[in-house]
Length: 493
Image 1 (cartoon, rainbow, N blue to C red):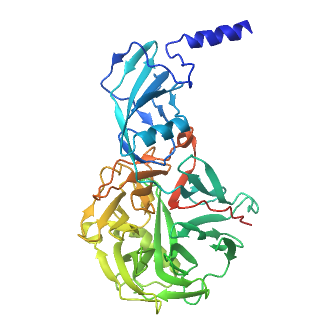
Image 2: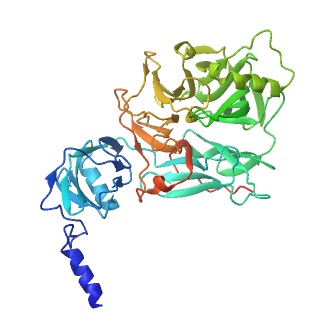
């Protein structure tokens, strides 16, 4: 007992003594000025965050630093946080500071200790926007195994309190050590009462949740469809889902920095009538590779990516395997443009396709289009070629202004590594994306504020209680989808 009391006493009189009220550390009484800011993980320096975001905890990513104290100054006061190299902010304190700094800045000043010397670093700001963010975002957690799917979880994350909850898991579906693949989760107008995801493998199909009731549809391929449905897009209010159907192949590189190339050798668009349980193929040219459908918010237009790649007259194919081989040898020549078709909801038919953005003429490939809730902007993933940009280090997110037809390269939110899977929050003020900026191997979810002048701000990652969460996670986040409500867990058998 005496030794324990002495230990506590020493802690109380150390250079980073904690106050009796609230457990907040004291700012060091003596510190030298340092003109540089240490590397932080995650990086929340000079970002704009929504009013309802969980506390942006972080750590000092410097092996020589042993302690950190962070002083948060907000309108009306200041608070300090820090324990070891980690800054973990009390949830109630963060909520109070954010509400006090609504549409204003919280100024953060860091003090770090190396050996016995303290340093004071330049301040940075966290701007708190009154534009809220959707309460939930869902994603697929997958190991980067490329050809296997031993452990896949479809998860949902509460952006207001950093809780992670399961929607579906393949852990209980394993047969002889192999589980079913879960992919392509999608929701109707950000609501979870009507949602779907695919279950690939023996006994698999498409898990449709209609009015909150799940049903596994095992016979979605109908008529002349080239495959089961793949990439989905719910109509915003009608019981309709646009899908692409794809014959997809993977190429594995031995020298290229991109480890794998995912490509289509055949693809087309179809329309599924949920109530009639019927599929209609949307007519297209056999040489068009059409994929990634997305509806306009009013449901009157369907946007998608399409690559027109006609092989030479001297080349003929007797099998799909021969076609796949040909595309594999010419994969860098395949580039996708953005197209749109008008939709008549009375007749459930589409007008002729219209070229929206000629990316190929610019030496680019544009995929994964999504239209903002106000119908003004279209966000998409851009790469040098191909359709699966998450594997391409050069890939970025761009925004096309549908009024001016001008493209914004979004330098503030992109990085030097791969960005893909962009989508909008339900109010159009936040862009979600999957990014490999942290280590180039694992994709993480990043979020950027998109202001009313059409400018994107510096992106930040999901706020975990433990700042080391994503650093230690050996799985990738795939396909971030914001949600207005929590989804019920769906059991996959």
